[in-house]
Image (tube, rainbow, N blue to C red; front, side):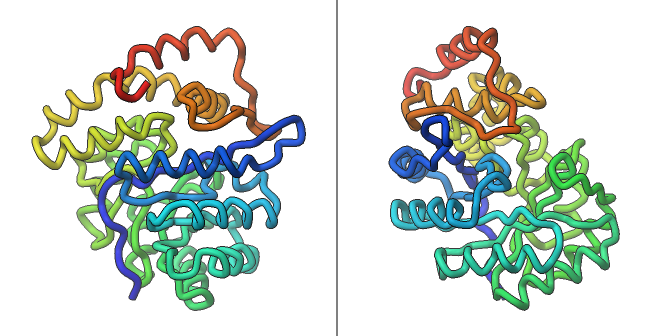
Length: 297
């Protein structure tokens, strides 16, 4: 069976675009993933929701994957966007072709509230690809809600599961049950909004797209070394920005603009129909960034 994901911070990578045609900005993408590697992330999650994967063509997804594979040596989790088995397998073939043995896990969304349907789907994906499965429970995107007890049943029936990404609020309660009843690591997401409480509930770390992953790393490392109080102290400088970026509808645009202002990508455009950043919020974003520790501004 595939190896379980290592604990820590798996950075979810944004897809930078250039110009009015929103072409994939390969140099910016390379610079961004080099930064993730330099600051000590455990691995990268590519073509996730933060990467706007659902808005990319198959050829653009190939470009993103090739750029990341050619730039860094980190292990990779790669997301697929479809919910039905056949289109997931079509996406997965491209992933396997480009990523090969670098693939630490294929991130597949929960596609039904029925645990038997979910397990059959995930097992079919593994059998066709040989990939370890990262089970993503993210109802905001998938529009599929599953009870935590049923998610446990589903994952127990998937021997190839290498992690669960728990993004159905309230996440600390879900993480607590998942970690108590499963033998696979559970990671929090949602921009790191619940990270402290998720760690307290047993999470293995974070897998998310916060614009300052240094804060996620600092929090997780402090948790390991000093527990809750140390992790809270390490995370406090970042929490206003975490909260600001978590605003529904414009969170993606806020995060990409923050990444641009940090000098990691050239432009902060998001593809329609994603919401653009309201100009009125720019001064607030600037204040949040200016308040970060000097070494990460």
